[in-house]
Image (cartoon, rainbow over all chains, first blue to last red; front, side, top):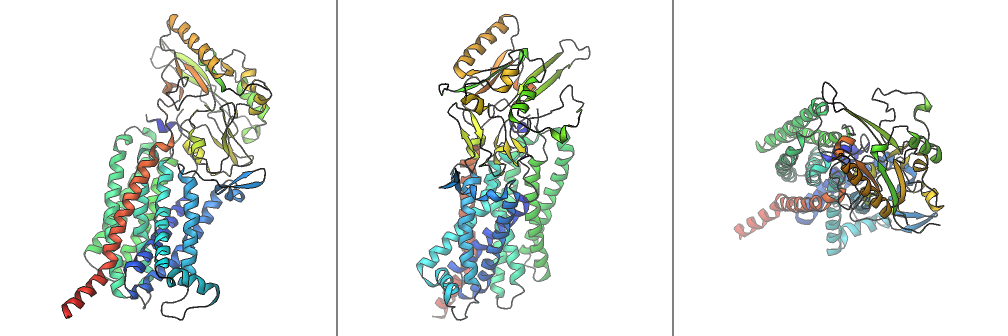
Length: 315
Length: 270
């Protein structure tokens, strides 16, 4: 038996799974939009705008879920500020604890996402607004190198938001989670593929978004899915030595259910959409592929979370 | 006021009689609520109805029925009063984002319930499965080693109540000497499996609540080589950074091509 089986469940379940999903989508959407802004064409701004319009609401809902998951939700601010004798002492920060630095990362990312969201409320080509909205527009895209740096930093924060959740699970003593170091990169890549799939579904409904931009987005999604497949197989390879040491009653019940679900995620959430993308099918096939990628991303997180949460403590 | 030197528990499992006085004393002193309103619950697992440490059970007497052979020869019925180990390198303290978990002047580990926000990271980080949420106040709780009593130079409630001195309290150095002598005595009497668990620094820098066992740790429900959660931090972040770099390149290749195509087309036209 592996040592991690003597640890207890953290009860991270129904609020946390959608948070992991939305965090990945928010970070991924911001990253894709930032890339389009930084290295894409002027016409790509119609597509990048969609990413910014998704990122902030997604991370906001995710934050709400995180707060609701706390057993003392009104003390959520204790994550960021130390509390000693009712005097907030700055700051609560541990670079060695993913839940601590992750709280800062999502807070900082939310700031970037907020500014970009407000800036994106104005359609590309429309007259710049005055007042606060105009200020956000200027920060986001009107200050030359500074704005590019702003978007780049936001993209980095987005990637970190998508990936730290995997590190959060690995930096524990729970079985499976702590037995692999690849969950952070798995969540990162999955966050990007699901974000690209969502942006495709939203983008194809808008006439302003060019076919070419959508084509490059689906190509990015195909490459992401390819990397995701490699990472997921790598994760399973790192866990191979551990799987034999898991309790047989768990293996025959939850292990089977989660194993079948993971297989379905790999086949229908990665391989089938990848095959559709590589065949360069259009229209409805790509809608199906994108929907499958989104569902795959959600179920992938559920499988990862429940793999440890369903395991009873030994001893 | 006692001198602030490391204090802790030494639990000699060979003299535990499973009376559960420690469990009762702990509950009473710390005013911990009974589960399910105190209604009798029989687990069917030996004489153990507490089953595990939790937010409301900070002491748990384990009953280990070791009757592997058919004729029950060599069978043993072992008892062990389990508790927070107050690790010198504590996983719970390492991950706690709020600063609710602190190390005291006695080198023990205490959760400040007015600071904890119930994120539950400490539960997943503890390699012994000690911590849980107390439903009465919705924060993570565990043994404090009776920090309030320690500050008044009093013995923790469980050690005070233990009728066989299975749970002993005092400065860690003194407890270690006492335990090593006891191991030597047991081995001289033929109990060659007698060993200390967590008395030296090999397990998480040392456990301020260590045990004398007469079998492998796993038999008592203890991990053989518990580790800190941060052992995975560097590798996780490194893989994450590599992944981000790869995806950045993929993003560049995917989204930049049009501009490159346009440049190429302009070149051809010229």
